[in-house]
Structures are given as C-alpha cells and as structure tokens.
Amino acid sequence: MTSQSQMRSAHAISNPTLAGIEKRWEAMPPQEQAELWMQLRDRMKVDWNEMTLQEKKAAWWIAFGPHGPRAEAPPGEWTKVWLYTAVGLGISLAMFLLIQSFARPPPRTMTKEWQEATNEYLKSEKTNPMYGVSREGYTGPGFIQSKSAKSQGIKLEPDE
Image (cartoon, rainbow, N blue to C red; front, top):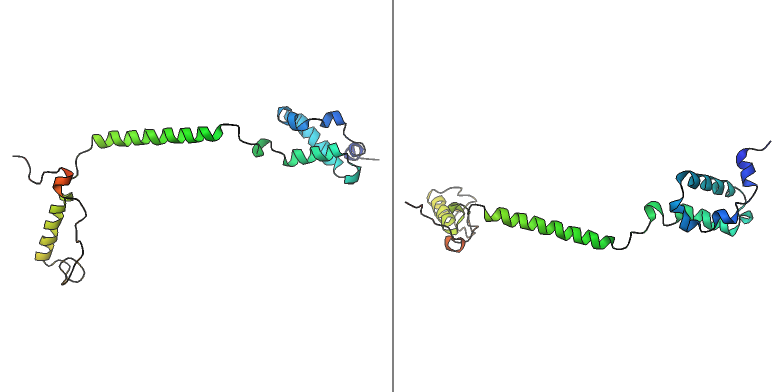
C-alpha cells in the first residue's frame, strides 16, 4: 500500500503546468500556489536525476525567485522616497521659520554685556575661588556665551 505523497512523486509534473511559472506565479491563487509547491516538494524527495529540468527550474524559482518579499522595487520608488522626504523637510523648515517669526527675542540676560557683568560680579563676590572665574589666574570665558546686544538687536535698558 502506497501513501498519497508516494503516488504523486511517482510521476513528473506536466510541462504545461510549469511553463512560464515565473510570469504566472504572482497571479495564481494561493491555493494553486500551495498545490504546485506541494507537488514539487514531493517530486524533490526522489532522486534529482529523475526530475525534469523544468521541475528543477520551477522548484528553484518558487523557493528563491524574486517574488513576494524578494520582489524588486517598482520603477520610480526611490524617486517617490526622495520626493516625499524633500517635501517633509520643506514643510518642517516652513513650520520652523513660521514659529520663529512669532517668537520673542532672546532675553537681555543672553547678551555678551550682561554675561561680562555677571563675570565681574562673581569675581567681586569671590564666588567659587577654587575652580570658577574668581580663581587666581583664571583666563577662560567665564559665563560669556552670546553675541553683543547690538548684534542681536536687544535693548539693555527697559523702556520708560
């Protein structure tokens, strides 16, 4: 008594079934794909010298061919990726500039003059004499990190 799979493996799959499988595979219903793959799997259990060249090619193509997740990207896909990325960056830049145009100017404490005055105050108060600006021989910038008020367009005195 022989099993169903042994009976199927006894004979070759017809050439019309395997002809042009590369072109037809994606359009085939999943049930037909599964049946064909099962027939080929059963055929691969026999000695490969008994398999036809058409069966070998079809088995390889179904297992490793460029279909499904291995399919090549459609033409123009990278153009779309670059285009959508550029559009996204453009929208982001426009939003940033719009928000910046309504922003307040930096506070007057963020001017070079204010920060120089802060350094002088800290030196006069002898703040952090071991490592800070009031240390003997200190030559670093201290708290200066900004441009002058004139270059930033900031008024130091409040309007009266």
